[in-house]
Image (cartoon, rainbow, N blue to C red; front, side, top):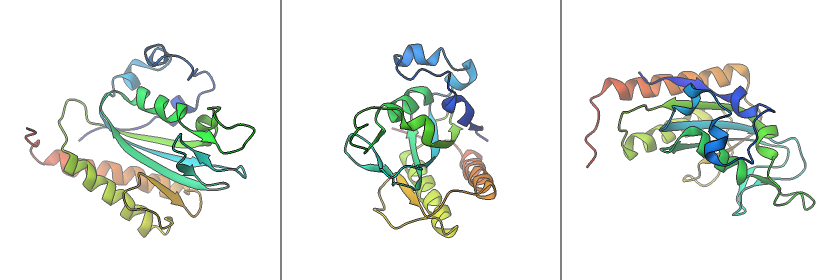
Length: 186
């Protein structure tokens, strides 16, 4: 079974300088965290401000006064992926546009499934994203949006019980995948 980590405290730490290069940034984290090179992540965000948090698109990542779950996969390390999200997440506040920094303040959870050396197919990852969307919808948390989006807006913040259920989903889904023979990826 693949390990599931809660890296929230590490990525929210006030001591992390996200202005560093990716290699220099890695030195600010533990060797264990930096050893997570491929997997999936689930980030939970809250936005207490009256302005949307957007990426460079500008695609809305967290509605004004809202909550969201952003998820994806990574193959070049969790640190680089989270840095990229930090560097591309901005407030739509006209006085702060283009200034990164809302990532750390709005981040509530970072859950990561470590694939280690195992090859995981795109179909397995896509299936997991479907399970995650179903979890959000079945919990009555989701707000309708484009089905291909990797950001799901939430009607409210996650409760502790819901966050624990999210971790349980990560563990149970990937335990089932790991129980199967590894796929042959051509």
